[in-house]
Length: 285
Image (cartoon, rainbow, N blue to C red; front, side, top):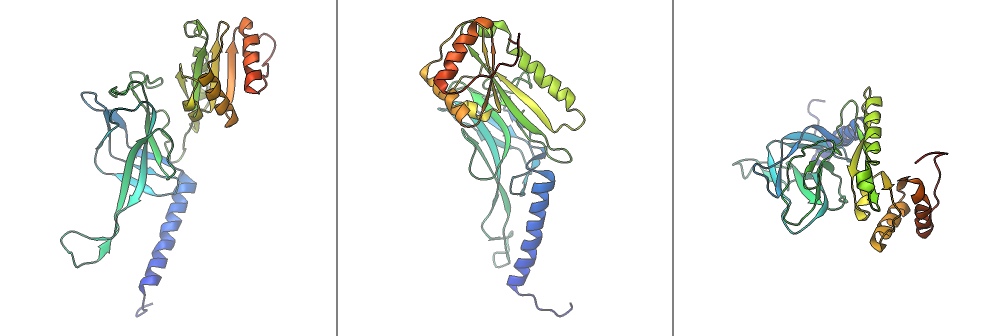
C-alpha cells in the first residue's frame, strides 16, 4: 500500500522467498546440468589446459550459473587418472558497484571451475572428464566422440537439462587374461549402447557411455556397470581383486562375458570375492 514502511528485514524476507521459489523451480522442474553452451575444447595447439566456452548451467541446489566469456583451465602436470571438470556456483562479498564507493553494496553471482579426481562435496555440474595417462600428457579433443581415448576430452557424461533431461550411465569394459582384447567380445556392449540410444530417441532421457580397457581399480566407482571380458584362463592380481571387491561392496553391478573354458576360473574368483555368480541361461557366452 502507498505510504507503507518497509524495513530492511521485511525487504530481505520478501526477496529471499522469491529466490527460494526460483531455485525450487529450477532444481525440481528442470534438474541439474547444462542448459546451453559450456562446451569444453582443447587448446590450439594442445596443452595441459582446456577451454570452457560461454553458457548456462543449473546446479543441484537450483542455482543458475552463467559463464559470459570463455575461460581457460589448466590441469597442470604431475597428476594422472580420471579428472572431473566441475562448474560450481558462488557469490561475491558485498561490494560497491563501479565508482560509487559510498553507494549501496551488491552481491554478485560468481562461478568456480576445478578439476578433481573425485566428486566434490559442494553442489556442482560436470562439464567434462579426462582419463589422463602420463603426468605430462597434453589434452586433445576426442577423435571419436562416442569413445574418447585417454588424454582426450570426454563430453559424454554431461547432463543436458531443459524439457527432457538426460541421464548418462557409464559402462566399463574390462579385459582379463590373454587374448581378451583381440577377441572383440567387448564390442557387443557398444552395440547395446547404440540399441539403447535408438530405443530412447523419442524422449532421450537415458543413454549409455561405454569405456573400453578400463583397469580394475578405484576408477570403477564412476561406472554403473562393469563388463568383464575373458577368453583364456586368468588370475587377478591383489590390486585388481581389491578394486573389484570395493566396486561390488559399493553396490556396483558386474557382468561377465567369458568363454566356456574360463567360467570355472571366474567362479573361483567370485568365491574369493565373496559373491555369487548368476548364469544368464543355457548356451550364453
